[in-house]
Length: 382
Image (cartoon, rainbow, N blue to C red; front, side):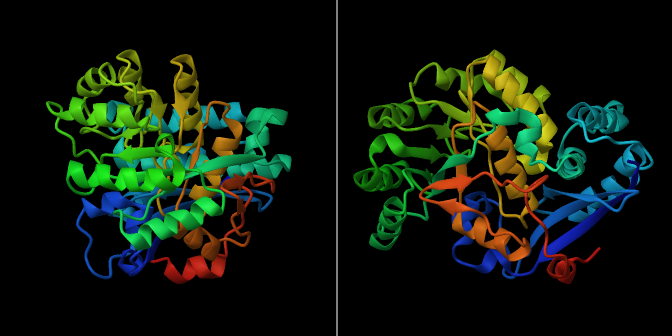
């Protein structure tokens, strides 16, 4: 087949962040100011062949999605369009390398450039699965692909009776593991932890510090998590420097989890070399499937586990994450946020299969989903 078209659709869903449950879906928006009526913004990529077969991908960009869209149109499209494609993983990897090489000498090895590449990369994998009439996980892992993946639930907030009742309901529904967020002071966080531990057990709770910790005082907080047997400590410090992460990792038993801000295996390599993390969290809307697989292989060599990161999106990004998780043997858990699944279900023909605390691996070809295209076009602005 010949790749005849590469398109970018810029999507805005006005007022998305006004809903009260969105903070649980992506608490980092508490750090980034959110204006009333602010839209969820994302970029879809569609790659089409001369037979009319198309693959969809998605990038997660929380501001200026037109930048990633312009990159797809002006920089990435010439790399892809007009080329032969047989749906092989090695071909997609070659395309990734070619896209990356277009701008690496200009210093564009992260940010919007990689966000745009992620959308195109996922679209190529979706197309490959459709060509071979197999889900992406089966293309990558064959019969070793998982049929289901355990989740952890993003906790909805502080230790109020209402939030604890919600946690009990999800625990009864099969969710065994939860993640809470360091929104305020250390005392409040530990109170929330201990209250939730009475429902699910202290060993089933992860903590996302949202980059709030002071490197000079973090060891004491780490000791509190060690005493409780926490699942992991996520994002303790600013993500650019591996040194403080490595120093804290050497002082605590609780694994440090990092990865949502990194877009390539080049960026995570120093953290592996310094022993700074034992759980890696690639965000496929930023690194795509190809680079997520490279990160997963590097994690396996380092003896680390994978727990992919997820942000609110229309659906292709969630399904890409599920396909990746089903394909990767060292993937421990997948995040679950009700708001995220609700949004995906609105814009996908197939509802997300979630039951008893587990996602079922999508089994339809490619990503395993089809977009409700008229709905998508209603919110597209470019």
